[in-house]
Image 1 (tube, rainbow, N blue to C red):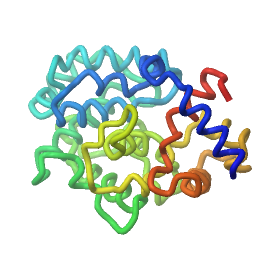
Image 2: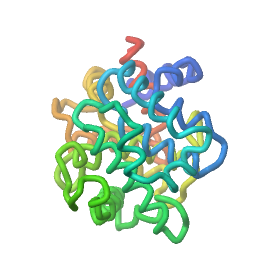
Image 3: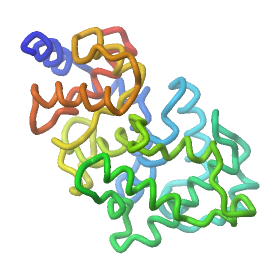
Amino acid sequence: MDKIRDTLERLYHTFNFETAIQKDPIRFPKRYREPLDIETAGIISSSFAYGSIKCFCSFLEGLFNIMGSHPSEFILNFKPSYLLKKLSIKYRFSNVDDIVAYLFIIQKLIQQSPSNSLEYYFHGENTILKISNFVQWAFKVNLTSVYGKNTKTKGLIHLLPDPLKGSPCKRINLFLRWMIRNHDIDFGLWKTIKPSELIIPLDVHVLRVSKRIGLTKKSSQSMKTALEITEKLRKINPSDPLKYDFVLCHGDINRLI
């Protein structure tokens, strides 16, 4: 583990975070100062952070242009009928209806939260259960005003994976890293989960570099793999295992490891 620690520490202390932010979905919530704007932009940005960086950043630029200077105000007040007409772009597995349905779910969850925050829905005995509870709350929202009937399509379900079904939940774990950690580029707005309890946002980049440096031998992007990598990182830094997540991901993208 000493060799892995030395590799990660060297990369961490020489890494240009500010430059890498411009090619990362965190650049969108970084535009805002109000906590609910950051939270709202964060859950949306992380949810569509898959595929090529160029593609999802282009999609998100268009979406945030519609929302204006305060995305939380837009989300809390938009009507599905308006956005169904206004939004003309789909993204990969999710069509316009699915995207509007997802944003409508975020609207209802924030409106119904006693704390006026999505943090309210992340409760449970451990991080996996907290994520699963959030997903279950999301699917309780009636979507008749979007689809014409209360249904849950594949394009919507893709945006809300359940860790209890084996998904690594990369995008939700990415969002949680932003909200929980208060170091480096992250915001540290929430207290529901401790930094030590976070799970690595496992994608192809993190998996590839994790295999390369010896954090795992697994080849599948699964929750089991995410937990194994996280546990190895926890041995290096018990209080903040995701300290190296950003540099692992961008270290692979930029071929630094």
